[in-house]
Amino acid sequence: YTKIPGQLEVFKTDFNAHLNTENIKFYGYLEKNLRENDSDEEFKSIRTFRREMNSIANTVNKFLNNWINSGIDSSNVDAFTEELKGIGAALVKRIESEENKLYPIYSARNAS
Image (cartoon, rainbow, N blue to C red; front, side, top):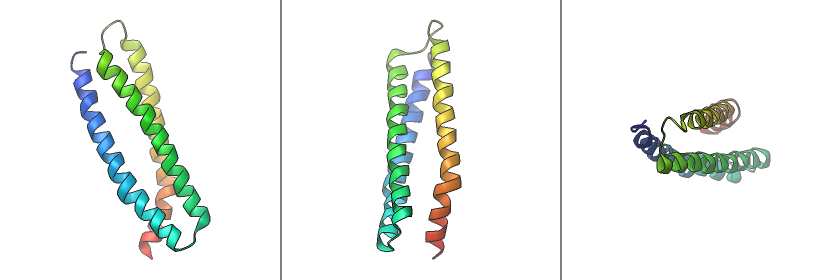
């Protein structure tokens, strides 16, 4: 259990670096491109995805901060595991949603 908070710190660093890159490069690119091409519906969709990801990021970071600070031991490992499963499921759902809805928009814009 003593190694878990350190591993959560590493994940937190990597997760937030990924989000910063995605937020600036990916969403920034798409919003600029869609705004210039008057794709209102797609632009709104991208904005919604961006807001949703910010909400998910806040939830994940709250989870990470909580468990990094409180630590995990035999008395709370079940609660940690349950929360971790929920976070994992939310991230998988998000990735699937991006792959099915967001990336096709990007691919269409990037191909043109």
